[in-house]
Length: 601
Image (cartoon, rainbow, N blue to C red; front, side, top):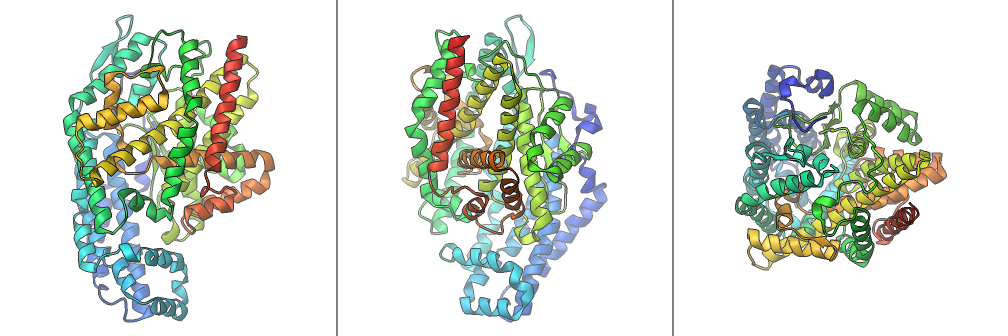
């Protein structure tokens, strides 16, 4: 793959996802769009009636499910189509219509939770006893009742639901500005060859051995964000203020508490992560020192953190080869798991390569009744192979959940989602480390592992700390300007990477390019998920079948239990900081080995 991206129309069909399996014509999508519109008043007709009888109560929950199942297909399809080419106005129109419909659908169902909470516990229990069909909703109802003190009156909840589209505006503005409107231009490498710069190809440019290209690409991308920093600061500030507003209206102690409450996770889990990382930053500082020494640089910059330290090994990974490696790596999870991965490859669940206007990054997304699709921006690197198995982890989690759970529990929280994806990455790494007999290749893989720790554990925790700081500033009545956030972000980079890394002025703009910040207090789950996945993957390698059985049951349990309970059933207790500490010990051990191998080289 080159840094030049094709138009969407030029991409071969076999390299794209087959969304026709959801809707093979515009007419069918329109029919479901209209069906959602017709279901909205039907659901609203139950408002004020949940206390009438168990039959009415059950009928309302069933109608809410019916609406949800149709709506999620309409919404998800429209957005995935728009992500194929964010400059395609027809697809953007679909996405906009789906977003407006979302506000109406959420408003229609907004009375359910407060009205359920208006019933006495005895009445709800009476319904469950009187109508056996309601038994499936027991856990759902327990979760609703758990939020009693944070639920407003039906009228107030309806008002908040109607405002949801406005509340989502900062994220929409950020996405359109960064994916569709901003042109990041081109840069020349040391030989004068021109390279297009974009989020989709940024990482491959950062892995180039040409330091001139790395520096220019870094400064071009981050500098461009810097040109828009005031607009991006206004957008993100509005997002943070929205979080604080909702947390106060909902009577939470903080925006952080509100964000993690649905998982039934305590704030201590978030703070324990940051604390454990702070205690182990010395290991990251050692890693940065090693990188500077190995690369023989007088000054180490951020754009030097991605290039492999072992440049004698070229582990390119074309997509066709990557599929075979992925299947072998995931074999410990059993024949059914592997057959499902093969189906993902053969049935076009995956949108593979970058194209002009395509949404950056990667994700797994789908609905209860659709395939669990995957969006990639594959550029034939070893990191792309890890991204592939990562997203397959999400999709297989969805597959097992949908196969084993009713609709009401046919999803899962991000807290456990990152376990499934990162476990796959761990299995891949262990396969590659276990098979190589080449010293340089082993060094390369150790380097890759340490980089995964750096980006998934240390960096995501730094992001989590940034989010915590800026939300607390707004909660204290202070304002978030571009300069304030640049200063905070620069100081955090100095803390996390130590004195060895030169903090370029452009690096202080990085906060403005992180899309996950618009899904507040989300990124910490990458770090906790990484630690849990490392524990579970070691159990699978050590115990074999019993651990695999526990793990597949975990995947199939969806949201039928809370995240901490789910993981405890699988064999790891994330209510304690020990899994984080254990994972950081692995980082230290691999760093020790890599330092030793470099000394012997």
